[in-house]
Structures are given as structure tokens and as C-alpha cells.
Length: 278
Image (cartoon, rainbow, N blue to C red):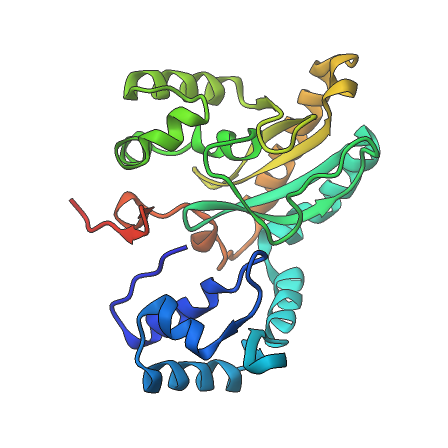
């Protein structure tokens, strides 16, 4: 995920984006090449991140994500309003439907799983806590897209039309708008096999005030979904999402709300660069 590189601090923090599931460790030379940094700058950034505990030394002169992340993760589990409002609902829904349940938030230009409860033994969702999901695929993300303002959706269509079309949302702005409008009016989204083959997801929106804050999804095997009456499951997911929205609205203060909203169009990451305000 690209970051605004207006300041040295932004450029330093952008180094953390290089540490992924596919490449969990980096050498200093690798960081230099990846970000186009001088040796002095790269070592200065690495030294600061090591001191903060955000990176840690590993074998063969490499660096990995540091233990400070665990401390921050614990703080999220204790203090994040969405997690606090939704964790008991997630577990209750898992038991009631015997399905895997995902509690997700809007983060940057992606959708991030904040809480996960495995429930359907017939499938194992690849999207567990902390893993970003595709923005245009799956019920979890599409229900969020459907509740974004029209100008934000138009901006996404303009700059990422190929991804939008590839996800089956349409090849023109009128088509995309009509399909997402239908999802928004229904109040839920069902998607089959779009993220994990053989899995079906049912998602409903979670709101912070009038703004979309995230989504609540149940995931079950498509074979099991085919023999069940979907209406009770849809109703249960919608009711549970509405319960979380009410809990967020009742919270006296929510410092995490701004983080969970997708950014305004001028901050959306498009083709690896942040777009300036038109």
C-alpha cells in the first residue's frame, strides 16, 4: 500500500509496507533498492524503526517486523471501538449459524479483517484477522463499496476500471452504479467463490453515524449454502450488523472512526500513487 511521501517520517514508515506474507524479511541492501534510498538514509530509517521495536534483526543480516507490533495489536483488541462493539456479536453469530464470521473495517484502499471466528468445518477462510481483502471482490467488500458516496465510487471507476470490471461490477459507470445501488437497497450482499473457491459469503454493512465503517460477514461452504434457506441467515447477519452499528452510535467517543472510513477520493491510492484533489 503506497503512502504519501511528503515527509521523511512518511518515507520511513513506508518501509513497513515492504514486509509481507510473501516476503517477511529484508536486507538493508534490499530496502535500499526497493525504495531508492541512499545507504545513509536506509540505515538511518532502519535504526529508528529498530529502536521503536517496529523492526527486529534476524538471521543473515535481515530485518523482520518487530515485537512492538504485538503490543499495539493487544491495544487494538482492548480499545478499538469496532472490536469492542462486535466481538461478542461475532461469537454469538458463529454459534447460531455454525459459520465462519468476519468483522471487517475500511482501511486505506482495502478492507481489513479485525476479528475472525472459525465456525464452518467445511471451509477455512484465507482471510483471518489482520489480512487485507480485495476491495472489489467478495461480499465483505462489495457491501462496503455499495454504501460509499457516489463521487468516491466514480473516482474508483475512473482510475481502477479494470479491477472493477474484473470483479463483475460492470464496465461502465452506469452499470457499476446500478449494481451497487441494488446491493445497497437490499441491505446485504451474497457472493459465491469470489475470494475463496467453494465458499459463499453473506455480508451486511456496519455504520458509524451515517458513514460506512465496515461490514459483518458469515462464510460457509457453497455446498452447504445450496441446501439451506438463505433468508434466516441473511436476516441474522443484518440484525447482528445493525446491533454493532447501534453500539458504535451509543459510544460516547470513538477515536477510531476516522481510521476505519475509506479515505476521501483525493486520498485513494491509485496505481501506487496518491491522487491530488481535483
